[in-house]
View 1: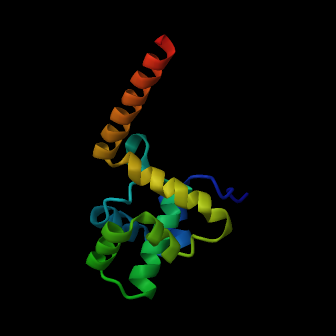
View 2 (view 1 turned 90 degrees about the vertical axis):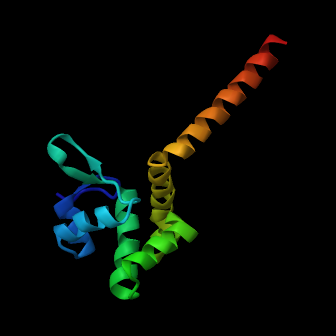
Length: 134
């Protein structure tokens, strides 16, 4: 029975879907900080649909467009995950949610961004508390 589009993929399923060996996915994790599959006990990797969308973009850029690893890193730094997802054909139809999920995955790995978001939420709460008291 085939998995649904929102199901998590194991490394072997992800590798099959991307047409690359598993060791390539592990290597990409070392080169691209934005590739962070979920790891369960024992280190088993599970790729979210957003991870797959990003990986498709990375694969396309490296294998089809001739980008170097440094080139993909620079593209990510300058244009973000949306550009990588769109490179893999992820801007059409159902993968718009994958693009949003990819952005959420990237934001969750950005500790500074989380701290800023927490500070903004705390400031908003303080303003709301003040309005409710007054």
